[in-house]
Length: 81
Image 1: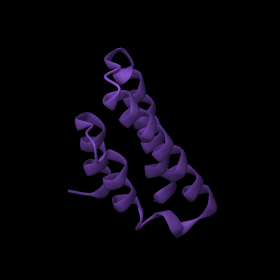
Image 2: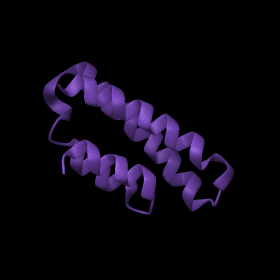
Image 3: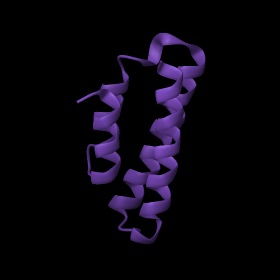
Image 4: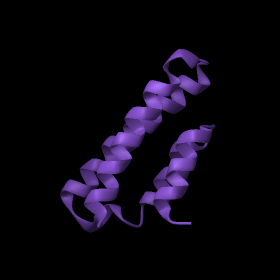
């Protein structure tokens, strides 16, 4: 399973270690370019928001936060190739 499949699973599953696990997975690709590093940072910010919403039990916002994280992940994936 590649890095991006694992990240998609993390987005779907949520959980307490969401950002830490994503940061570890993305650590290997972040240094390729400034634009990629910026996209990774934006993605991680969205994951932090999702993690906060999950912990705060704001279920009404989960799907929107997941959709935004998936869009950011798509950008990271495109920039990493």
